Amino acid sequence: MRIAALLVALSVVVVGIVGIVSPDSVTTVRREYFATPVGLYVAGAVRVAMGLVLILAASVSRAPRILRALGAVMCAQGLAATLLGLDRAQAILEWEAMHPVLLRAGAMVALACGSFIALAVVKSNEGGQPSVQSDA
Image: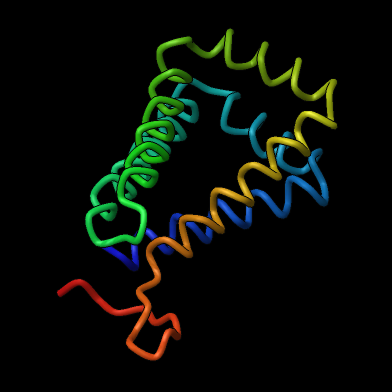
């Protein structure tokens, strides 16, 4: 589960970096998956799955409570987008597209959260050096 959590962290960090460098590209990608209800549901399911990975990996992390909270927030984001519906999600996206400073701020939060997740799930060995080991 630790490796899956690291993959979640990597994807969140990449989205954060791309969002800081070019918020328009992130908006373009989001417009693509908000174009159809299927895309919205798939994106919501992926977000819920990422949240569940964090919740399940929390027990073997350095900060289990915070990781569980981040996982719960990710799950809530996935469910909220799905429950609000396609029209509302598109309206929110268009409002966000008019405020690139807010998009960059959100990307910075994503970068910070992804970095924290990575540090929380990387196990420290006896010498104090981080190492990634399988749970099995």
